[in-house]
Image (tube, rainbow, N blue to C red; front, side):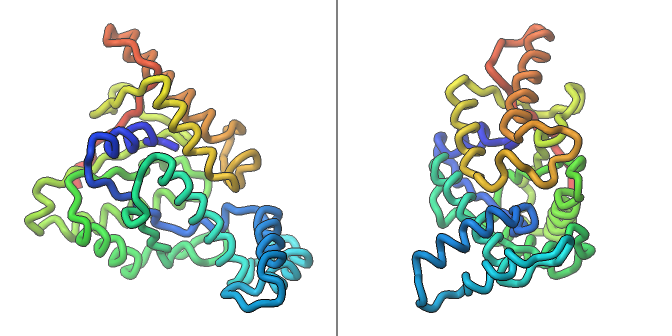
Length: 263
């Protein structure tokens, strides 16, 4: 949503790009969306065995009461929906599947809007993926206006992990950049790096966002902004470009903005 243009530029320029999903995102998938996939899965496998018992999932969703916590199977299905949508988007932009990582951090897996506090297991998982990749640049969501706070917890996990890894030699040349865009954008005086986008790059970014079909039309945790995420992102990126143009800089279709954080 917030750095798809920069993401595609890095891949096209030949960098070793990895994308890491910190949580499963299962709570943001509607029951109707999960039921649709369960019914398709059930029709496809018939009476055969599967990791997910689709008949059980369909029965649960059809009889689910208001505010009832999803069963483990339902949460697994919703998480897989988000995962496959993520693969579709990253493949579209040109990323290899082996460079896409899913952490499924434990703090998120409560089945409720209210999550567990960030714990040492969460931080250890984030540390492990950073130590494995040894990145020169880390880009993370700094949009703390997230209505149910997941972004803030994920960001705190990154802060804690990178602070703990700081003594390692490979971290001497590792910078942390924070992006926004889903709920707010950085004010112009806060921006440390601005990445201009062409009209074709804006369109590519939009199409990548739209691969996340379960997050279209009826977003479960969108806050006070009722627009779809791709509309918000484009408007904010284009507004940033207008601000830079007004300051006398070059005119671009859109600009993605980043703030450097010293961990």
